[in-house]
Length: 215
Image (tube, rainbow, N blue to C red):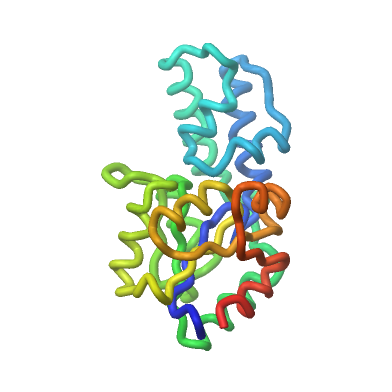
């Protein structure tokens, strides 16, 4: 294998979490008497952590304390409902199985809140990951390289044989800032045209293409 360590984004890459994120967002907006958002709006809001998601979802000019209240309402609801409609993309488990069989280390680095990353990793990927890291205090979130570097250090990964897989401009920047290549996940929340427009040069049209790109 050309790459010995394959690290994935979570939302829009391994898991289709969009409906649950939209439901939690609209629950938090509704209980605070704010206009709801479409699922396509939420699709473009995610990727930079739940704080930024809520900042983008609330009306412009919303006071900071009210925005924090919406974030709290989102967090409480999402903790209870993060698995209602979420599921793996077709081919994901087969990909992870093949990578593990080839001797690759696999991990998740996500801007999703760490409590949700750990819950979802345990639910869907138990035995298929060597590490999982979500947004948490004390470590800069993507596109800063800190989270990815921390997981690479944990795994003893060589940057020369490590690749990051993600579906957004944030993922492309994270990989660039870390000094590793990025495989753009065209099946994810942003799509192929968006990834190309933001500089992606390695593209996986389908989940199964990742394995070939890692060889």
